Amino acid sequence: MPSTSGQSSQFRYTQTPSKVLHLRNMPWECTEEEVLLLCRPFGKVVNTMLNVGANRNQGFVEFAEVNQAIQMVTYFASSSEPAQIRGKTVYIQYSNRQEITNNKTTADGAGNVLLVTIEGVQAGDVSIDVIHLVFSAFGFVHKIATFEKTAGFQALIQYTDVATATEAKNALDGRSIPRYLLPEHVETCYLRITYSAHKDLSIKFQSNRSRDYTNPYLPVNPTAIDVSLQPTVGSDGKIKETESNVLLASIGNVQYAVTVDVLHTVFSAFGTVQKIAIFDKLGELQALIQYPDVATATIAKESLEGHCIYDGGYCKLHLTYSRHTDLTVKNDERSRDYTIPSVMPRPAVPGVSRQSTQATAAAFPATVPSSIQPGEVPPTAWNPAVPVGSYVPEQSSYPNPSPTSHTFAPSAVVPTVPATQQMLPPPYGASPGSGQIPNYS
Image (cartoon, helix red, strand yellow):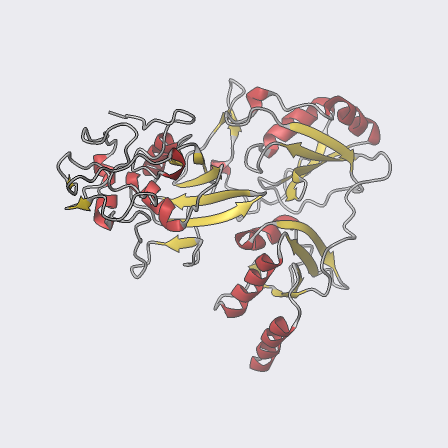
């Protein structure tokens, strides 16, 4: 047994790295959703080919970048816990191919299965129930499977016959899902519809990503769906967002670095942050922030939604509740587990102590000190443009300093710097587009 492991590790490192990984010893008829759950922590998967080989227990996944594939191989090669799907160890190695080319999803002619690309949304913005509601208006929908590819968020919808599928395609192609069925932050999303090469979708379990409406006795996958966390449509037709102790932050207009320490400084203003994970998804920077309870997460979401980490409209936060309740993260430059005693949060803002950051929960909402005039930078704000020696801090009481908490050097004036270089203490940034510090008092 040890020799087999040694040969496997040696094979991983002697093969030429590729953004396509070869997966072996997969469960019988493993689904794309199960594979994506294993691969997502390491980067964006743009293509898959599953259930290949004599025993249909092998597959290929293609990452957007080769560094993401290297990270996954390296992690599981050195981890004490092997890669697993359904409790079965999966062996991962580099593929000889550099891309997956023979995964045909579109058909040459009409068929009973539609391939729908939903433009302008992320995977969590449109639930499978909303998709079913829209497409069942044209006939009985047998099965739905959703997934993410290079083209964006997509869905396969299976009808009884070609005629029904054609009617739905002609009616919905190029149209938008009704506005009242979408979350508030999504203005419009357009449907691009083609015929799929599939004839009969293989759905192994009911989940938030796949559904078989012809088999009510199909088991529910506990790792992929939590009914209590599924989006539901209320009587008014609007989606009810289920609260969670984990927030999903989508960060737009990223012009400055957003690190784990920066996010910890921002979000710990409202309570103890347990875990943080940063990742890229469909070309957008996103992060998961875990609090101990739902109440703390709700306060943080309501306070920070729509605000910017940096003044001038940079690194704007859009917050939703995640379906996760307990994150599994690694301690590296893009993720941190603060529940481990040896992991201490490092302040992202020079001059801000850890104690003062944690004290923000009690002090927030903070008011801007009267000694700080409009356009000036608070002494505790991170500002690379302020020359060294322009102020002499006595004792930081960030983020709610008193007017006498800092003694300025003689004849030294804190310069007014461009808004694009300011990082402000809570309340972070300004109301979108206002350029001013909001006052919550």
